[in-house]
Length: 283
Image (cartoon, rainbow, N blue to C red; front, side):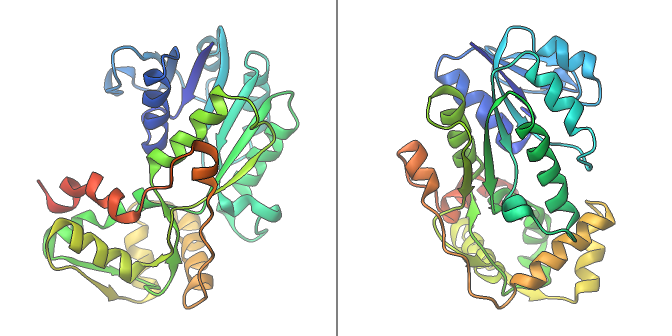
């Protein structure tokens, strides 16, 4: 009954691996650099990479279920990877995105990558479950250097609402789908419990860490330059296009999926900030 976690060193995958282990499940983690994984000792860490199907096959030996976080910038390898997983495992939980819902946006590269991966998995014999979160609270960690410096977060489209979700809540839904029946074929629409603008998110960070913080609106071009320090241009443009379409619009209603699946309400953004306060405060 071993579960393989692909992406176990990532923000969500790490929680999946640990939560599975805490339930007494044998867990194997696929990592490019096992020596740097820093996972609990009871979790087996094996070397491998999705670009190396032989290493994936080796990691899948005697594996019953798989958690997959898609780390690639293209959906092209999805057919081969999904097929390889299906040769060994029975069940798969994919961390996808709400951007893939309703056929995705043909003009959005992020949407199309996630949709391609979902479609490839659907064509296999796997018992699949897709997690489709809207916004990761963890993405706001990119503001930490600015907050530590002077408390001012500079960005575009501060009026954009997000229903940010804690990575531990996404992991809890994944673990439920990996370990219990009744989740096959589900596409879980995942959000946190409230919609907050980026301006409000910055305010919450300040309240939690106990220092003055504020949002400073900058041009799209300036925001794009900052994003290009972290991600490729086509993803920066896709993100900013999405932000522009949401700015000033009535927010989407939060879902109750986390509580429905796990029995526990989704954590608030303030709770998430408290869990990461040291990164924002520099302590």
